[in-house]
Length: 250
Image (cartoon, rainbow, N blue to C red; front, side, top):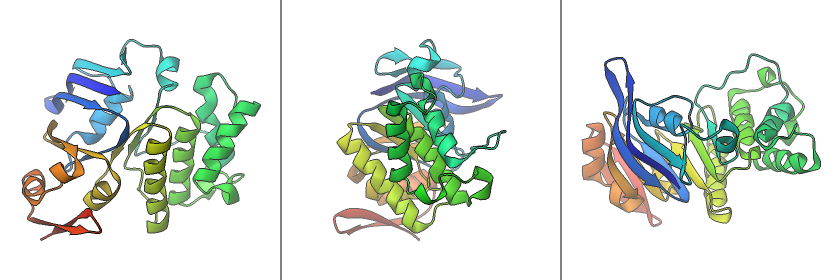
């Protein structure tokens, strides 16, 4: 369980996250909202990539601000939008980095099980020995997702993971997230701009605007024309297709 209580984050005079209280349980949760809504900032605060200016965040009851980094990293993995490394690594070496919170080098028998599984799940076998700077943007993105999966945590945070992915790999990734959330009882939180992807794959939706959570609930409750129009200031039509909500912007 991820819980935030009255969380505030400021960037100078700008309040990026404004008094956010939300509980996120097992399953796949999508965070949506217009640019500048505070989605990525909230995710970064939960993952302890940035500090907060007020409130509290807990992971399974452990305070993110005071719990040891390695203990948090054994429970939560996070993938940012901008992933850059100052050193030249192969795909396999990058994925093995996910094992460090568990005290492994990525080379022990137990580490190898998780590394090999992540490489296979993200369809990276053919490029496993290539360096990251030799890959396409989509291949690099999948390599970083594989590193997060190799960390073998119960909580996974992904900020715009579909960036640079073609439709086939984007669909494959979201299906994988759904399967992992179900089969492993994981809590997976994904920041998404594509509302139809959120509606298709998420269990719950957190809708943010101006740093605040304005709606939080199942897809059918949040993905409505009225709520989306108010959220994005854009006319929307919501239809049903094969039992799923589909959004058409007008």
